[in-house]
Amino acid sequence: MQIVDALLLSEEILRRHLKDYQVSKKLKPENRGSEEKLSSEQSRVLIQHLNQHTYLYSFQFKNWV
Image (cartoon, rainbow, N blue to C red):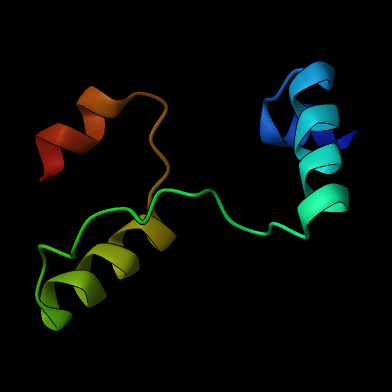
């Protein structure tokens, strides 16, 4: 399996990411994301659940939440 297959990226996008890294040593996207909305306990339960269940579609996960 190749990196592009594992990450579900096109080869062009992967090349662009690698070039960005080589030029600027950029490891993360520029955006900072958002603040966490879950408590520590909610995060722990969520992580435990996702380690035990695999969802193919987001609506399946949404139904669990």
